Image (cartoon, rainbow, N blue to C red; front, side):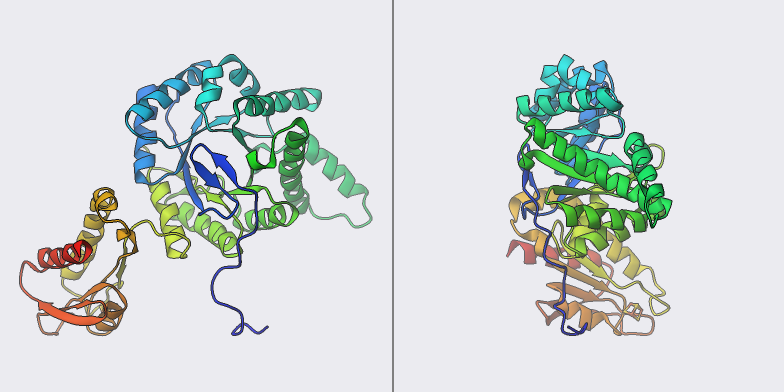
Length: 408
Ligand code: SF4
């Protein structure tokens, strides 16, 4: 098969067992789920409810909250209740480390209010304690009918397993490098824990795996191997991705490559926000990745050229920005009023070079006048030139055309 004979598009999805997390299905061929995590103190019910609601309204289909101590565990049922009263039915996942077994046993209302428990096999205990404490969390999941995510993490890797693999590697005829050993420890940590959970009695349809690393190439290698060796549903994410464009680029590269290979049932962007920054950015970024790669559709697509020396006036940039903002703002209402509106394509182009061509590919496109062109902006609807806009109300006139199109 030469490259040109290969079918375009992503590889077939890696087959996994579907897992119900509250009302959402992860894996088993279900659409790839967007999830996120709060950064509030879970014991602060008001702040956590506000952030979960904001994340859910931005499109997060599952939200994870930290459950790190008694006060946080006691707050979980109150948070669930308040969200239900607000009509926010997003499933909540409890993120447990070190003492999850105790918290779940001491707070049955918390165990019940959560839809899934995240267990980190690297910090659930050591030797016999580990077996006992890991087992206790799994038994709680069985008792309450909940899913678990077994989430190995590069930063808190199971040291016992790592030491064992290092010794085994050192004694082998062809020892591998330390990076390989660490990757193998991540993979085995997730798979051995999942096998143990099944032995205790948790169904495969209640287990999701993740193995998060902060380096893109390691993450890709670890997840490829995890998928090759099992059919558990897979949660993808680059851990400690970082701030700003670095975090977005690194996560998009890693997650995008794996999704293209058919790997991944749910994704989370672990972006570090600016102090006081908008947490919903990670949700919007995850949606944009899925939409841009053609896996899901969340909002109408606005194609805009980057602009260049032919767009010396600010009209083009302002129109592209205003249309994008207007659509984002209108979406919550449009979604209710106009089913299917997310499939709309709008093009805002800067001049005659690519403007008419790109506009014809969109449902509605406008080609603004570049420097030296006639002060007129042809508008294309469903590939045909429909009218020409001019003058100071051009932006409002174009919005009205878009809205008319949606209503029709
Ligand atoms: Fe520049 Fe025109 Fe191309 Fe936009 S369409 S980048 S304005 S040449």
